[in-house]
Image 1 (cartoon, rainbow, N blue to C red):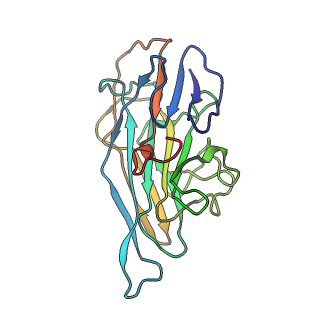
Image 2 (cartoon, helix red, strand yellow):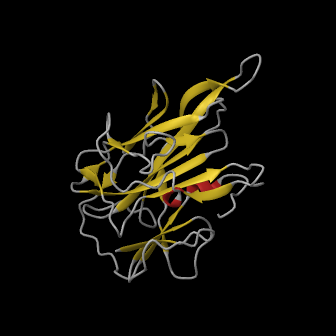
Length: 252
């Protein structure tokens, strides 16, 4: 299995495509007969509160929101034992604290599930940056190419799960910097060594402020034990939920 990225704005290939390729496509689909993997997403979690910057009287608002999901095979087939699938965390930052947020992230996996990052199946990290004086419209940003962030391919133990830290330091200590109007989407390949009948979700630990923690979760994980034939000629397309924000970010 080979993996590449086909973001039109970024136009950066992670590796050359071979007979089969996982691909991330922000918006629109290439002419080749790709198989588009749908996301099965969980509920939105609101995590933390803050007082809006420089408001008087103070306005209390939600700091961050997030949801998680994992890929199915069309039309709605669950992963099989030993088959790589992707999980993603999608975050927004509706709050406006004066200092922004340094978000710590961890991945909490069910029994028998492990990360499966490799040269052929890397993790992906994207952000949508809000409009500014220098950029009049929101834009898609590949954090994997950002010299201050990068995208982790290894996940060491954390407080409750596996740390998802920006390998180039991020906002400090590997945290992910966010402010009002920012969106973040992280995609991580997983594999299960055992069947899962739907008793455990995949969870994320989201820590946007001191003492503030939330746990957005996927729907319960279903991993079947069937022997499924997958064509070696399939090209698989992953899509970015952050490209569904309004207005549509430049690069999607």
